[in-house]
Image 1 (spheres, rainbow, N blue to C red):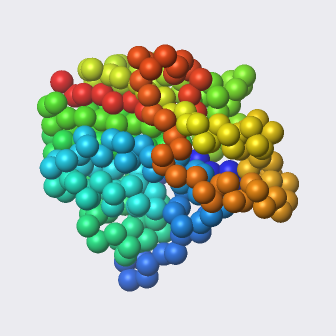
Image 2: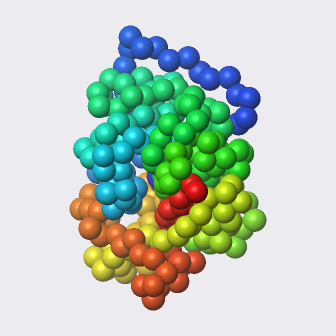
Length: 274
């Protein structure tokens, strides 16, 4: 999730899909609904999402992969470096047109994630990064993931950690997040859908980002959000630091690392369909 407020909620069961125009590729702009590459002002959020694709791409080597909720498409294209086949699904018409035009290795479809347009037992891996918090019926979506996966197929999910993303609140700070999860809730959602071998890791700031936190009043995240809300100019140091963030500046660690997953920024879950 970027520092801007997203435009519309997605994937309400029964929604009518907006129309895709295959002849006219869309140019995606920064709205906050999805992160996009190649913008210095968005670089922190882009790298925070990109790192999960990079770290988990090994799960996709030589396999048929579905990205459910592909956004701009950079992640599906990264997976296409190693996968046998990558199918991407998104609800948004402009996004689908953009992915179709920009990422030729990705087979993109427009669909509601509550009703995946794929045959049963047709995929080896389902990827769902920074999307599930937007969905109206998370249990239905996870059941759909189980349906389209082959036996021993893998579901990979990332999502903001409710405890640190909307601290002390019963409802999300972001009004277009329908339900945010903590680590226990995410694991329970997957187990209840019949998945096994569920593991949850956490994404944290690494040493260089912790230095940036200290340089910007304790949180480089809060410093960005404050400027976005106020529509205020960015100090030169903040702009330079945000533009300099790389995926190496994040740690993705499991429970054996000694850090409390409840303190993480994002949750990363891997589960296996029996």
